[in-house]
Image 1: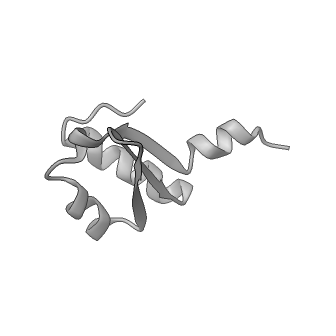
Image 2: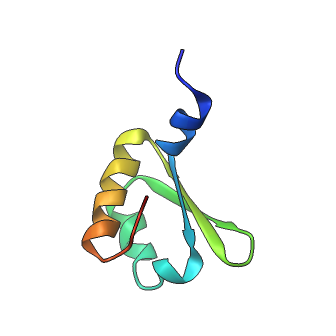
Amino acid sequence: MPDATQLRDSTQIILPREVLEGLEQQLVDEFTVTVFPEGEHACRIIGSPVEIKAASEFLSRHGVRVR
């Protein structure tokens, strides 16, 4: 059985909110993901593993470091 942490990591990205400035709308338009506020300074991007992988690659191409 897969580890819950591994599954969670493949379906979400948590980033500082300011990192998405100027990219959030393009991210939501291009991928089937949802962006939720996570406290005052962060946001959580949630989607299927395939969409999260594609969104991570998109963010990386735009200079956003995703671990």
